[in-house]
Length: 350
Image (tube, rainbow, N blue to C red; front, side, top):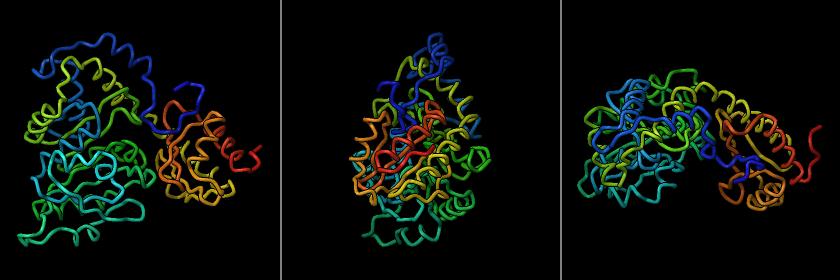
């Protein structure tokens, strides 16, 4: 996509920094399937240290990370409890059914934030003809709820109550560093109770590709075998891991800028006639807003915005999503608001 566009589709569209490109060009590599790629080994060790876990594994994508975790934690025929807008349920091609033979027991929550009181009634009783609960999966931040952050006290209660029932809990933490910045707490602290955590290097942290899965040594050993079954043996992928190391070290330091830009967008959107948004729910870098009162569908507005140099995504015919990231400046966010005001027939801000 041309750099002439203000690209608010996702934080996956970021370009590698000059430092990442230099590191990739000079990366020391080896065969990772043999465990011989030193750069991947350093990345995995660094990720494990940051999350205060025993081990970690480098993966091509967050979807692969989530699906590996599901496969390792569950047995065919079990249910997975998750929020109804969860990524594993809606955007991973039903792989939890294809690959793991599981089904979902979805829970609706107003802001995408689960509580134990919501989950407990959904856990199957010990009746032989009921699909048994095999895993609880949470998402933090919650993408389709608008980047909302799950409070740590919710996590602690859910994980501890689940563990009493011998149920594992996985975190889809694609944007967990955004949650950590919003909470002002280290990622290790806010994820300690989970049995496994997946996080993306290629979203807000800015790497060109890659995600990580962290957990116990035993869990990661099983994950490594499962990664191979999915075709995830990447050989000399230290070229990619080199960028991931920089993303892991440097990326979290600037996420507060994305959050501030998202809040700027939300506050501006709230002033545009026909736009509905709850500014208070915008906690990180995702902004979802309702355009149903403009008289136009989301796709119609998106098409008109593109003509004015702004590209973004549709959630459904009523909702549009903006995502801020390191390649969109504060000034560009203001320009995007002005373009949207024009599209909606409102007078642009002075």
